[in-house]
Image (cartoon, rainbow, N blue to C red):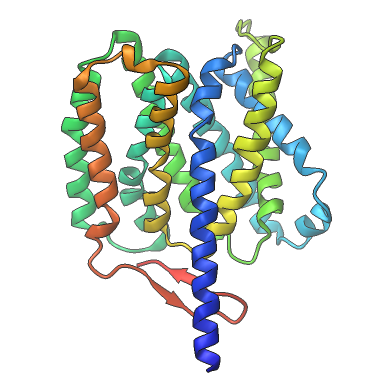
Length: 316
């Protein structure tokens, strides 16, 4: 009876984690749209995003007491992850501004492919052949996408690919070090360090004479607040909470619904379907087919391993 109750409790945790993650992915689908609408440069946009997000977290109760509970070694790791996060965001918005929102979110579908190589390094397992195979399947899809966009969009595509690389890196590190730490405290440390890092970069850039738009226009403020709170603070915390119960494979599968949400929203809000032809969307279907088949190719899958305080999803 006790084991049955524990199993039911574990199942509820996993179900709740999936719901949290699906909400995150839906909210993240708006980030590309908002990034396209906000007029400031990509570097400035991310600076304002992490600044507003970090400030909003100051209203969370017992925030600093939760931070003090984190070991010093982990604090440094979380701050390093924050630098990776802001680099990913800068490249992501640079991709959108150099091309369009559809190209930006589409490139994020490549993140599991990079994870196929990055994850084994941190979890000390071998690279799996079916992950490499799915990586090769994406190539014709990417060809169809790139041949149907302008030269300026190819630049955005390159930014987007590197954005996906950094996304794979920081998500793998978050999965490795999330256990036993409070998600809100982690979010504050990561995005706080991202804000400090970006501030230094922007000061150096300004001293070097680089000219970029920094002060948002009147219409940008509402978009920035929505981006920071609804599309960053809330989903970032929820995604960290879900990582405690959902495996890396399952997380990657769900997160790759973001291109679907993002492109669909771009159709509705930005009418970007007029900028590309049918070959572009055929490429999208090939890439998404590869992404969605990724977890189903796992021969052994994932399993639940009991833990004294909570259930942890073991990855192998």
